[in-house]
Amino acid sequence: MGITIHYHGKLDDPRVLPDLLLAARHFCFQRKWKFENIDDRVIGTVERVKSHETENIETVTAPLDDVQRGLLIDPHPESESVWLLFNQHGELCFYMPLPEPGCFWENKLLFTKTQFAPLDTHISICELLHLIQDRYFPSLQVSDEGEYFETRDPARLAQNMGKLNAIMDRLESALTNEESSDPMADAIRDAVDDAEAAEGKPPKPRKRKLEVERGKKLSIHEPVWKRGHGSSAHKN
Image 1 (tube, rainbow, N blue to C red):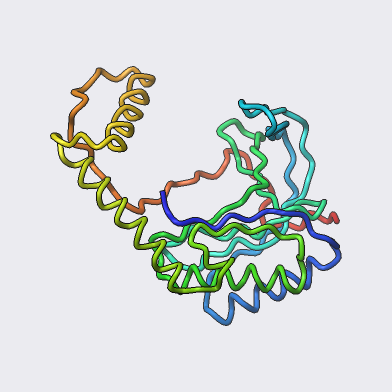
Image 2: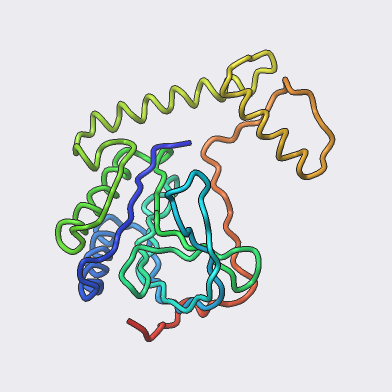
């Protein structure tokens, strides 16, 4: 849960990628944002979505030999990264390593959660995406849950952040109160019970206090094999 910026698309002209990345680096330098240059060849097996048209998402597995080129940007310690990564066809794309060595999940619907970072960070990420869209990537699709990208209205963003914080405050209070009957908290307790049952853990009282750590980031472990990270793919 958290205010999130979603973005996806395919470059109208892949030849603009070097200039796009140069402009993005300059944007980061101006704001002292940390970033990592990515230029990898990714080889293995990929699982990707086959169709979104049915109620159940269908996936397909296929051999993979592609590039992953661009920038991984860290605008603020309390914000998720901005995934400015492209495959050899000029599509925004991140190949997420799966637990099995050499296997990846293809993600072309990228997003960045900014809920716990300052408003200025959210605004600056949107301005970076506007710059990219206006100068290099007209078909870039962006959807901002905070509504700043669409309106460029800081007050609207602050209002949406405030609403979500109020919901999270209520939910945290309900989860830490054994006597609470909040429907959303009960749904989370049910999900926790199901997960623990799947792991073979003994059942616990349904009405119990749950520890809440707001804004905790998930750790993504490096795959067992080395993907040649940092070496040029010499493609595209």
